[in-house]
Structure formats: structure tokens, C-alpha cells
Length: 383
Ligand SMILES: CC(C)(COP(=O)(O)OP(=O)(O)OC[C@H]1O[C@@H](n2cnc3c(N)ncnc32)[C@H](O)[C@@H]1OP(=O)(O)O)[C@@H](O)C(=O)NCCC(=O)NCCS
Image (cartoon, rainbow, N blue to C red):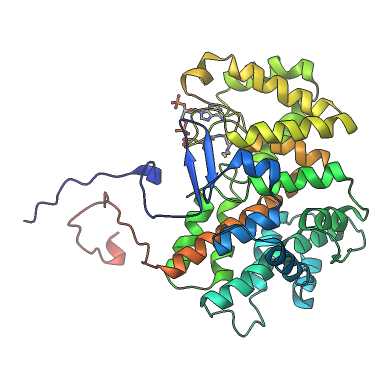
């Protein structure tokens, strides 16, 4: 009999390092996030989303000429093919979650693309720009179509954030709104080996194409333990309804053993560095809209931070906590939040995919078999 060596199972792959990356680094205990060498606080203050995308894909910040050419390339690719628009229009309006529509539409972008299986660097960069530029158009078109509103096409004279808000609302966003969305996109663009990035890389490691890898990532991002958390956080805030209800709501939720959405993180065991910037931008937007949503979030954070249960487990606000009211102030429906997350994270996924394709090894972990052993086949009439 062969005696098998004792195996150690890393449930959830917690703490397991599976690759090297130049994209980003999370220092959980210190609450630090670094993109390609730059501290997130520096980027939050100065970067545009387009600059961050360029930096991830070309491994350096663009100079002025490179940035203009990169922005032009994205702007010229915003229109979506007819078959994708038909698919959006044919999605049942009340029963289709926007993330399901986005996942299906991105997958459909590969249809009719004769080079969609080409995984060379040049082809991937072209398709990367295509996917990144078209995601906002898909999201805005579906939202307007489901509301019975006329679909508004993209404008080439607007930056990524402003163009999205324009297509969604049919009006030019204010500077404060565009800046808030740009900040959100910068802050959510990458986060080391999070679940959706990992699933994108697993797909690419089989030498499958970039459309398939991004489709995998979108499916993974959708879950409420990952990208779906901001939507749940906003529903939580809306359910609370008023800052005066926060304490009673929190006590009841905790008594029922409910998780508080927008709090806790697998890696950060202190303040998430992105939350500070999102809070500041949300406070600015709250001055121009209904302040209640921001006040509820602020009070909920304070109540949770005083709870010994949260203190012992080092549970702080994560990136989704203030993202929720920020996106809501931008007039975005809660069920669209994960799509906006995808608009940001797609550039990180692509950076990781470029790394994976450039130095690929099939990702194929093992499992420990714990089922029955030595069973004998039982004919069907004897079972
Ligand atoms: C993100 C998350 C899945 C990370 O969790 P994790 O590292 O796997 O940690 P665990 O699920 O093992 O939780 C550890 C402990 O903290 C508690 N906990 C974690 N997040 C909590 C939350 N948001 N509210 C209440 N309790 C929470 C768990 O109940 C567990 O308690 P226990 O030790 O008594 O069993 C988790 O914090 C969570 O579910 N948060 C809410 C959803 C969310 O905001 N997700 C977005 C992440 S960016």
C-alpha cells in the first residue's frame, strides 16, 4: 500500500503566493497599496484613469504625446458592434442583472472578430483597448434601454469618466462629478491577486483568448464577497434610511449575525487606503445632493469602529464602503455598481493578462481527495 504524504490544504488560497507581478502590491498590515511603484495616495491626487491604464499595459507613465495617442485610440473604439447592441436590446429588461448583460456582451465582442484567438502581444493590446473602450458604452446602453430611454452614443471629445456619465444621463457631467468618477476608476483599477484577477489569469494560463479571460473575470467579480459588495452596501444604506436609525440597525444586524457590507478584507487588517479618498470625494458630492447617504455611511463606520467584535477582528471599511454612496450621488443605480467596478478593474485584469501571456505556466493546483475509497461497482438494479 502506498502511504500518501500528509497534505496541507490552503482553503481559499489564503496567504498562498502563486505568481510574481509588476502590477500592484498590497501591504495589508500597513494599509498600503502601490501600483507599479507609485503609492496609491500619489496617484489618487494626480492620475487620470487613462494614465493608469497606460502605465499598467506599457509598464511606465506616458509622456504627453504617448498619452494623447493612447486616449485617441480608446476614444475611437467606443462604438459597439450592431450584434452587441441587438443583444443588449434583446435582454429581458426586468430580469437581467446588468452584470449578466455586461458579461454576455463582452463575451459577444469576440464574435465576428477573426483575430479573437490571437494571443500575441500586439493583438492583445489592440483588443485590450477595444474591450476597455466599449465596456462603458455597453453599461450605459443597457441601463438606458431597460428604462425605455433612447440610447446615447459615445462622444470622442470627452475623457473616459465624463463620456460614461454623458452616455448614462444624456447631459454633460459637472467637473466635480467627472473628477469623482475618475478618482473611483483610478482607485479600483488593480488590487494584486484578487479573485477576479486570479480567475482571468487562470483562463489565460490555458492559452485561451483575452475575451474569454475577461469574461471569466467578470463572472468572478459579480459575487457579493467581491465586486458585488458595493451594491449590497448601498442597499444597506437605503434600508437604514436615516442617520438616526444607524445604531438600532447595526445592533439588530449584528444580533442576527449578519455581515456588514463594505467592511472587512482578506488582506487589509487596517484602514483600506482607498477608502480615505473615496470618503473625501463622497463628502464633496453630498454637499451638492441629499446629504443623508453620506451621513449614514459616516455614522455606520463610527458605530462599527466602536464595536469590540470589529476591533478584535481588525475589520475596517473596505473600498466598497464609500464607493456605494459616491456612485449613488453620481446618479448610478445600485445594481450597476459592479459594472462600474468592472469599468475600472478591466485595465488591471489586462495588465495581469499581458504578464501571464508573456511568461505563462498553466495554473493547475491540486486537491486532497476526501471521498469514499475502495467501492465496488453496483449494478443498477441492486442500488
Ligand atoms: C471580505 C470578506 C469576505 C473577507 O473575509 P475573510 O478574510 O475571508 O474573513 P472571514 O470571512 O474568515 O471572517 C473573519 C471573521 O470576521 C468576521 N467578519 C468578516 N467580515 C465581516 C463583516 N463585514 N461584518 C461582520 N463580521 C465580519 C467573520 O464573521 C469572522 O468572524 P469569526 O472569526 O467569529 O467567525 C469579509 O470581510 C466580508 O464578507 N465582508 C463583507 C463583504 C464585503 O464588503 N466584501 C468586499 C470585500 S473588498
